[in-house]
Length: 143
Image 1 (cartoon, rainbow, N blue to C red):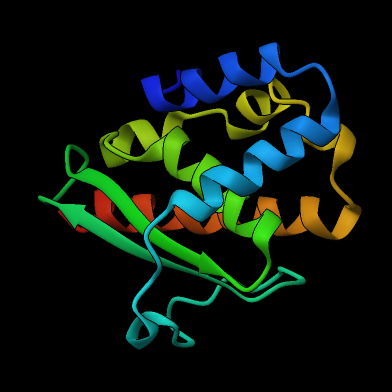
Image 2: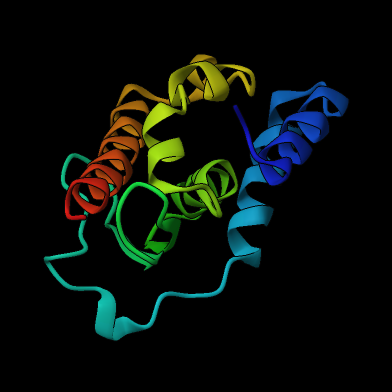
């Protein structure tokens, strides 16, 4: 289960055969994301487990399992900002119940990210996915 925005990234990755081109594409989609207001770069939104500084600020519309999930994110590393943009494409607009059912490792494997990210970056990506799933779980259960 992937959003249209994520499918577009996956399609582009199929077209880009060279990993360096894919890497540049990830950076470019990260650059296209709006910056996170510095007021939200606080310990409460910081993602632990990332080698870079990463902040994810949830933006939830509604309540309970059908609440619409979105988030804003930021990182001090260009590639990580791009990974945030990939996750945004994967999750944004889904209900929190749907967010919880996304098989992020399988979807991200389609992009070949696991084969080309350092162990630290892979751990950071897992930490971001875990944070997103945690936010979705807390929202769904708060109803």
